Image (cartoon, rainbow, N blue to C red; front, top):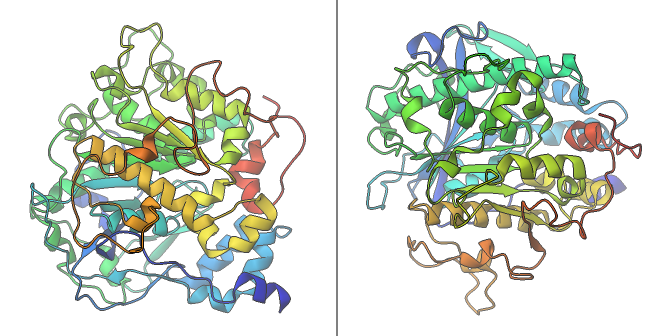
Length: 515
């Protein structure tokens, strides 16, 4: 009971930080109802699955969305297997099984979409890719906070074996489910590891292409069949129809692409695979994803496309088969404003993982030699005392564990800083998102609430992107320069397994990294 009292026996989420209520709906679409962005498909996956977080009408009645999806017992068992018998999180799952069933995401399930107050009369759209051990629900506080500021966020459930478990609706029947189990792959570089991660990325990139096609159909008022309604408690056949003509998805560069850890690596490979889709003759490059010239995705990914990378895990990007692509700069640098739409936020754990940090800088840096010295370059930051889990729901739900084991502090504030930076990058790139609350701006005023009416000023939170020291408490600006930050970086703790998966497992290793 002492453990329970310290943890708070009922884990829960704080309120979202923006001015809008947040709705959410579960979506699963048959692949046969969509146009494949590339041929052939990498695997026989009959559906593509994602959750939508969106601004909803204020009169919406709260109807719970369970953080652990149905079938809950199978999900909890899969998480226990993923976390490992010796880990702190596994013990947590074994001590609190009943409470885990009742953790709810504070959204309005299948609520009516709010009419966009933007000049375009449409909502900006972001696609957010989860990391290892993640799912469409496991970043709900981050993406829900973005939705509360006026962004429709699409959170895919990748079927590549990176989730502890995933389920595919093979029929409309209640129990017509097919399981996709977690795929155990080592985290140290080897030929086998690279081949397995390449296989996973092929699936992920193909899914993203399919999701893009689904968004276009939804926007045009011809939504495909949604199998998700059959597993939703309050399912509606017409739920996707309300998004018609309300999504900014048709103009080139209108969709933002974001991800965490393996999800961040996914987005790097996705935007670069689309942008550099022509296979150079005579190279050993083995494309993970080559969209058809007729696919609309080739017109969507352009130099002005915003890309948000949270704790980028670089090992999957270093595969020999994609070495040619790795040497290509991020697409943003083909634009005069290159780098202004590229944001990388690290945790302190990933910042101190020197080998990964070095690779991260190489991935997001301006091309060299370069004649674009006037380009702003990427935005790159980290919050002090943050862990790899700090950008997911785990830091919010289980603060005692993340503090005691990983040294993470102020979990809610760390996520607010992430949200502030993402919003400001979008504002600076002409996305109409709502104003940041006075509370989140950390302005010392008597009125510690939200601004009375959402505004759309592109200059309202420039401090969060400032490179000046101490501009924001415990928010460190970094540089991609080769010799920068060296006085701040600690020793490489050999976190190959520990940071990516073992941080979850609580098995922080001390031996040096072996390549």
